Amino acid sequence: MFKVFIFLSLVSLFADMTYEGGRSILGPYAKILGASALVASLATAGEFLSNISRFISGLIATRLKSSKVYWSLTILGYVINLVAIPLLAFAGNWFIAILLIFLERIGKGLRAPVRDVILSEVTEKMGRGKAFGLHETLDQIGAVAGPLIVSASLLITNSNYQITFLILAIPATLAIFFLFSAYLEYPRVKAVEIKLDKKIAEGKDIEKIFWLYSFSMFFVSLGFISWINFSYILKAGNAFPDYLIATFYLAAMLADALLAFPLGLMYDKFGLVSLLFAPIFSILIIPFLFSQDFISIIIASVLWGAVMAIYESNARAAIADILPGNKRAFGYGAFSLTFGIAWMLGSIIIGYLYENSPSLIILFVLISELVALLLLLNVVKSFRKKR
Image 1 (cartoon, rainbow, N blue to C red):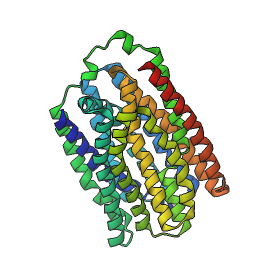
Image 2 (image 1 turned 30 degrees about the horizontal axis):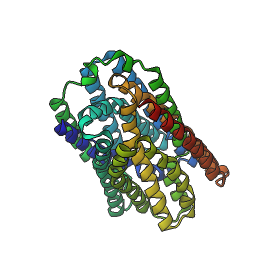
Image 3 (image 1 turned 90 degrees about the vertical axis):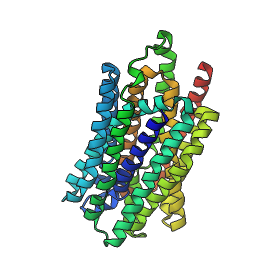
């Protein structure tokens, strides 16, 4: 089990090196290719497509109940996800680039819910908060290395985006290698073989808590600024060179890596209460971002990375605790769809507000995250009664 966990973590490490490296410069690249702030923010519709594909993937896996289906979706998703990033080197205009971003996100969506079910199985005895946190830490080593490689490449090549995207094909290949290693080590998924107690599997109260939880995270996502918006604002402000914008993303990913494990430990000790930091940090990002000085942008980047750490570790661990094994694939897919719709809407709204009334962005984020905070408090209370 632990060996599979390591393989999957290495897959995530090299996959993140690939697509987080590419993601760190999507905002500036979109601007170079002629996209406006609003058009660039539409690239986050890729997150919406990703989460639709997560929902479809989770639904397929839940209905077909086959280990082969779980692994096929995982492998197909990773291949699509990883091939799209190097192909950005050949995008001649912003339209093609956005299509490739969509393709990359769809690939990630296909593999995410089934991969998380497999991960929840092989980490069950480790403590899910700690395990998901450790996985996210290893994952974020790649997410730190990716933007670092991109930043160095842009500096050395005098901002040659084509060479930079092609370099990312190397970690993509390594990710696929370790993925097949994990499959060969753990070909049978228990979630499709074990019959759960009927009362547990069909508990309506648990389903209500899950949907309330998903609804609360909808508002967290709605007010959480996407990195495309974040980096576009930095590029438009002309206060920092392109390689430094990529370095800010590196700082965000480093914060994610360093905080994921302790946040996971916090989840194992305090449960869903640890999720309350997400809306608080999301609110604090905006004033630091708009200050446009180096120290403030570093703080904003660290806060952004902290929110991502909570989402990638604690929020995923919570789903495994709320739902029984036979409903987790659907649960991960449905949760991601809810989260993705909100992030797309929020990103478009923030892009629109930035072009028309930037001062209203903080108000929009504040209202969204306060609603999220109140709903999460209700989730914590309801979940404690059912345990």
